[in-house]
Length: 269
Image (cartoon, rainbow, N blue to C red; front, side, top):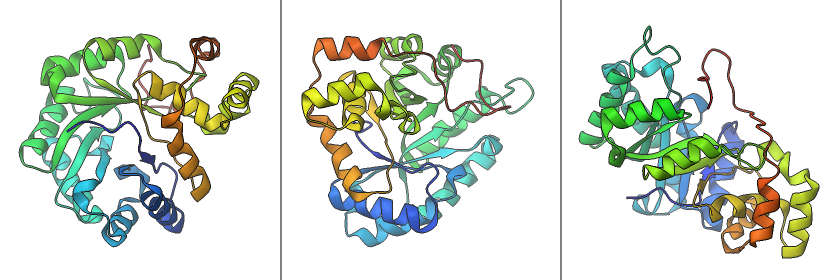
């Protein structure tokens, strides 16, 4: 198993909106879907997959365990509940959504990461990984699980937040980088540098931002509610940016972080 390069994100999508998004995505060729317990849409995602006609073994399905479910028994029970909602006997990837906000007071990593590994051993998930872990937290996760056991660290990356120190650490340790929020809620597609590069490649600004991430061997999981944008985003994989394009985008990094929930987010690198 390996984390696919391109998938559909479902953050902030609910009810009929997520149903339409996942249905259209599968129809235009997506075969990786990313959800989470806290998104409140696992049941809808499961419904669409079950009704899609696409064989389950052709879909790479990811969900994430929320911070309230970190005790061993709670984590395993929560994943079983997720599987019921998703109408499947396993997910392909289960992630810890955020590291425990206060590791010494709350459930420590030494409890919830082995519990996640146990979920894999029980067949609830084929692969396991982490999300929003800093370098120090990833280092600790490696000490607990081993780097080979960690399929990915899913982190915020876009041209305005390039997260270079963490990316280098992950790649040096053979852990796949999954970039979320690749378009920075649409902010980067308005950037004149991105727009100029898009013009040179006869592509959309969104395709350029995604191609930039893919060219660095990041997996991406953009979301969209429009069928035409879903299809267009998927075509980013065929774009090859020049060294000059990449250098220009590298200069856009400004540490502009969007996912930074108070009381949950770690002390970022």
